[in-house]
Image 1 (cartoon, rainbow, N blue to C red):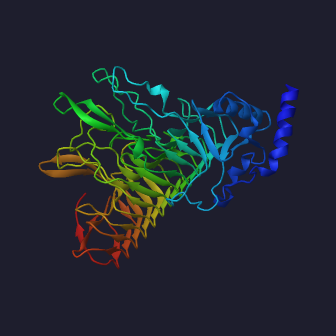
Image 2 (tube, rainbow, N blue to C red; image 1 turned 180 degrees about the vertical axis):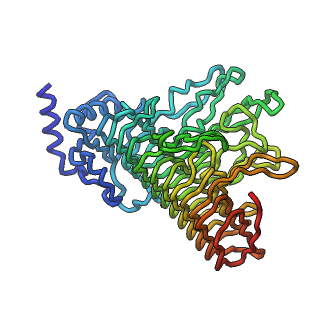
Image 3 (cartoon, rainbow, N blue to C red; image 1 turned 135 degrees about the horizontal axis):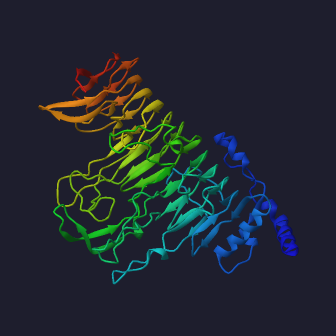
Length: 518
């Protein structure tokens, strides 16, 4: 054993001058990234094995004996037959691009590529087993493994999942930086159901391309999730259930881009719909963890949510989000039920949960999916959304300098105390307010009149935004220190400032003020 370790030590020392030993994340000014053993680097090509999975295991075993560190993959294509499991303190790192370093640029390319098995669809009998593909990069012990990450790797037919245990225990300091992920959906395990054909497959609408849990600190930055289209496959005669309970056959696409883009600690932290309780650190401590940064990523989706998070103080900034318009979608996320006009596929740019977040500088185009053979679209299509469902109240949060085509929705939250919505450009169409902030919760109708339960709406400042569509809505009681000022509405017709609360309203351009009870 000593001879083997000595051999590896000699080989690594001979090539160490060529290996990157810098903390590539210094520009983010996150002190916790210094806990990674950046200087302890090994070259994957210095390790033997029957395939790349075995060579990776050997490299990781060696690093684990020497305090953790970085496994460097020089430029090249690495074919993995099975998923990769990182151990505590291990980071895998590819070659950094020389010219275009911003992953939001379509010219961004990586020379270190991981190829996982591609799913081979067979429309016969039981079909090809799901476990032959849909591999990814995981953690060996997700409840404890810390200081782990993936840097500058292009991943094809794979995803990244840094998990937790059943009690929401997770390690700290987790990183995904500079990566490109193609064809990164996961197969839905409930499809096929007992009445569907055994070869049917559907994407898992609750598993993101980059899906990370952490006890504290995560950096998901400068990654690119581009359009995958070329590997989608058509399933003719796919069986779904229509609203009448009848089984019908349709031609359905397995769509690799119908999946969430980035989830970080994306927990449910409250009652479903507008039912109590609202999430608090006492009730849901795992939903209010700190140190989460999601920044400068490019995400393409045809459905589901581009970015979702919970936390306390989460930063979600300068991400570029693009959805494909006019996508036909036969089913809901279940892959079993036929879509109707009331269906939702959760198409939204950013779903915010928790307190004290900053959502800044994001650029997004979001579109609802279309229901085939009808004029209807799915009932979603939000831009930046903090809704009551499985969520907390809003507390001391900021939404600033974002640009998008779908509304900012602070929806029936059961309380708002401290919210700055400033210098956003939100150009919606139709009758939806571009900025919608309502803390009260709708409880139905009585004698033809809407019934609302009142919740506080305090310290809300909606300042210097550009809107189109219907304009701005602000409602909630009791109220205190609310301001709507310096906003500008674009369009031939005036926008509306729809008020259901007390607020200072001044210096706004091209709006009319309408008072309404909520």
